[in-house]
Image (tube, rainbow, N blue to C red; front, top):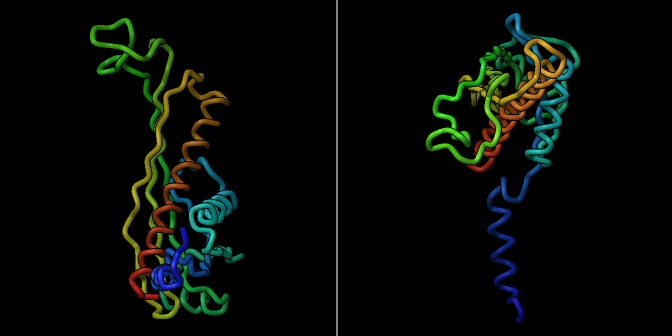
Length: 204
C-alpha cells in the first residue's frame, strides 16, 4: 500500500505546526531552589540534579542549565536578565518545603483477606506503617523574552507507601528519601507541562 506524497506533506505540516509535537528545543536556566523548613529529606545539590534529570526524562527537547550561585531573592526582570545571558528561553527559581507523616497502618477499610469483605491482600498490617512525604513547590517560571512570570502557583506534592521497616531506622529513612525523590519528579512533570503549554499556545 503506497502512501501519497500529499499525505506525507500534510503530516509534516501538522507536526511542525505544533511545537510540542515537533519537540522544538527549549532552554531552561535553573536557579537553585531553596529548601525551607526543618525537615529536609533531600540535599540542595541533589535537588538540582534530580530536577535536571527528571526534566530531561519528561522532555528530552528541554535542556537545563543550573546557575552556579545560590540566588534565592530574585525579581522576574533579574531572572530574565540571567536567562538572556545564558541563552535560555525560561528561568525557574523559588523554593520547596517538605513534611512527613508516619502512622501505624490500620485495618479499617482495608481489603484484607481473612476479614469480612476482604480479599486480595494476604498479610495483615500488624507492625506496618503508612509513610507519607508531602511537599509544596513554590516555583516561579519566567519567560525570558517578556521578563514576566508565566507560572507561580504553588504545586502540592504527595507520595506515600506502606512499609514494615522499623520506625526511625535506616530503611525508613531510605523510604522517606525515595518518596521525596518522587515528589521532586512530580514537581518536574508540572514544570515541563507548563513549558509545553506556553510553546503550544504560541506564547514562546
